[in-house]
Length: 351
Image (cartoon, rainbow, N blue to C red; front, top):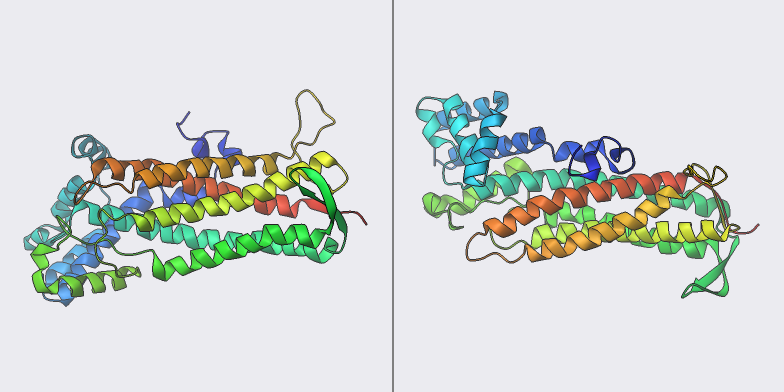
């Protein structure tokens, strides 16, 4: 038993997604944090902040380092962040004079937020690909049945006849917009976090901007000034996820209503009923509606997390940790179910 439906022993059969779960795993987070520490050392060596030999030793240690996760868990309970204990263990692994140069000029939030950005970037790339898959499946429906007729409905009442293509375009066009938005985030949103203790990179003095730019280049992230207490990038990504699930929820709601009507759509792969064996429930369509509503609800929490007091907020930061993986999990499930649902359409409209 778990707290989350997305990795529950059996609910995950409907709502889980292994690819996205992997990006929010302990292993992925630690790998990304170590990537930051190694890249920071290399960037600082390039600009003469630390010795090149120290950067080489730190990079080598990060490559083979496996932290004591139980110790990380114990330290988290005290520190509220994992990085102090991670850095302590890493310095022990590096050893010698080079150990003093580990994490030089950085703060815990730099490491954790950059890890989040690296993993959200991978998730966005995956979601853009999956959106393309859903669009392709719906466009195949258009090729087969686009010229057939449907009854257009406004405010749940019959209005005027439309074509299947008319209905399909209301499903497809928003998904294309979301795909473009996610692809643009690669350059416009997923950025390095590097500000040091209070966002001023005080230890690096005149070399701060150059080190940050090189660090961003090393990690293939955008170079933005520190955003410790300015969380619009995180909120923008959460908003994009809610837009995706909202559009897929509209698709699911329409399909469920068409299935209820009985003569507008034919689906394969419906779910069974324990009490009524004759039924084929539109499970995927229903879950798309639920996931859209879930993410819409979670989005308000991310907007609450925009309120950071002074230079850093532990409360708002923790709220992000609770919400963002859940929103990503919901979006992953929605994209998978939408592709399955689109692929299970056997007929649309009247011949």
